[in-house]
Amino acid sequence: MRVVSGIQPTGNLHLGNYLGAIRNWVRMQDEMAEGQECLFFLADLHAISMPHDPAELKRATLEMTAALVACGIDAQKSVLFNQAQVPHHAELQWLLNGTARMGWLNRMTQFKDKSGKNREGASVGLFTYPVLQAADVLLYQTTHVPVGEDQKQHLELARDIAQKFNNDFASDDAPVFTLPEPISPPQAARIMSLRDGSKKMSKSDPSEMSRIELVDDADTVMKKVKKAKTDPEPLPSESAGLVGRPEALNLVTIYAAVSDISVDDVLREYGGEGFGKFKPALAELLAETLRPISSRFNELLTDREALDAILARGASRARELGRPTLDATYAALGFVR
Image (cartoon, rainbow, N blue to C red):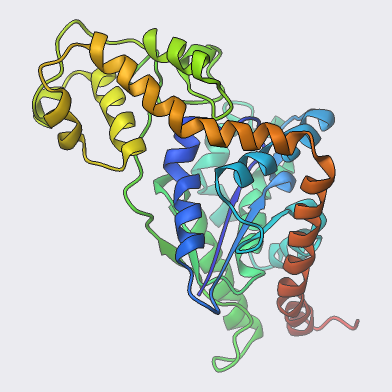
């Protein structure tokens, strides 16, 4: 079993990132048996498909590395690296561009969403980055990829590309690529904005009060939770009573997810109470949970040498793991090397 997953380096992680994805990465890493492997990468090559600031990309890559390690990704247990140090990703993307089809890419919904009305002005990279995503997983003979609803289409494309390449250039008994299977991670909490319970918590929201960042100190967490939007009604005694109350549901969901208990368990304890009692309890829970993460993050940020070493060691291992597949792809296509 080999699991591969990536994240774009786009600034500080927030609570939604942690509870929705990163905590599951840590759990998968810790549950791997001998001979199984997790590869987690910072998708910095993907970042240039949209307008970007080079200095900001470098800063965000190091910050994201520090954040992932602070959250529990262990470079001794997992392979942690950034794409730019493993040129095999870009090489394999180019080789797979001959197999991917325009019609397949035209159907990718994220290109339509990100290009908006200016499709002619979008970069070629934005159009073809699903092929790079395919290369990211096919390079390592990946068996499983954790995917949410918004990424299922991309994994299906990777499987289509792998299947067509194997059909066109390999034999049935010696395929070049493994077809990766999706992993549905444990039900991840859907964390919403503290200012609007109908919108996901997002780093792109202009209001910093809308999100809890993993580097927030206790005072900041307390302030944000205290000012979080709520309604005047007390908490119900069961989850059915949260229907039509998005902000109340969000705060209870956060408490449940951080505590690793059910929403109904939270309501058994706080049902009938007002937010004047619940918010301080939630803020204290969050502050205690984030304190070691924030402390480790800040410590790592002052040690550039340690971050560079983590990424270099991970990239070396990734290049070692990816080289046989890249060589087999060149050979299957008939290149003289």
